[in-house]
Amino acid sequence: MKTAAVVINTTRLREMPDLVAPVREAVTTLRRQAGAVRLDPEGAKILGFSDVAVSDEDLATRADMVIAFGGDGTILRAAGLAARAGVPILGVNLGGFGFLAELSTADLPSALPDLVAGRYELDERMMLQAEADGIDADALLALNDVVVTTRGVARVLRLRVLVNGEHLASYPADGVIVATPTGSTAYSLSAGGPILHPKVDAVVITPISPHTFNARSVVVDRNDTVDVELTVPSQDATVTVDGRVGLPIGETWRVRVRRARQTTRFIRLRSSSFYGILRTKLAWGER
Image 1: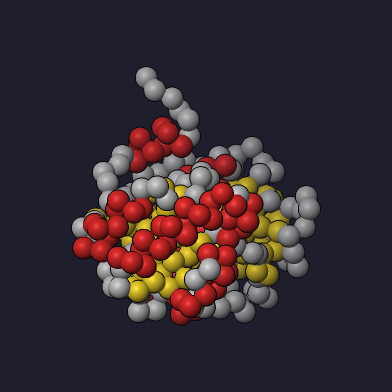
Image 2 (image 1 turned 120 degrees about the vertical axis):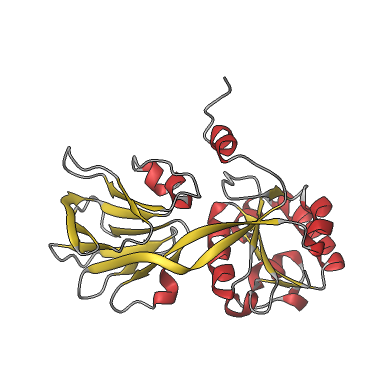
């Protein structure tokens, strides 16, 4: 590793000032051992490293890896930057749920020699690319999910879902989630969808609060194209990607989702079982 791009959950640092010192120490050690370090502007300001601040657009450019300090939301944001630049990502948990994180801040200093030397494995995860009229496709790259929903309070959408152009289902609902296996443990799970192992080559379609008793999640092939259409237009309809701010859907009232050419490559420094992570994070308990 010659250059590391660092993304930091600055909101969490402001909420929990005690985290600033260990994060600053970890980044200082990283600067000492790696060839160069770049930080997002807000993170650089909080940590006092303004000399290495780089805009988000250029942060991962010419970097060897992206290191994200935060929870899953921060890692998802950083994953988009890393995937577009074609570099791997390491998640460092700052005390939240951290389903995608590999290390804690306390673990990072001892792991740096392996990182610098390239002694790690890569865990490759599929991503989704969405398309909607009037929206830049670059903003619609997802590691977890693409969600069609509404900005309004208690407003129901009339939706139709097609797979490879064939009508699958129609229902009134609060929205529809199209998720990757990685995203199956996120919003889709909360909406009643199944959990998929990350290496399963599939996509999950999950309705959100459908106003019918026969609407269920459906698992389709990873190469299938999923269209989510509004049968009744709604100015409040939006598409969100990995939980980011909703963008209004264009005049066709349709969002098309397919497997992206990009992938997210997570850096793994230790052997871990997906089922063990599930048991720990979801508090299923020991037997």
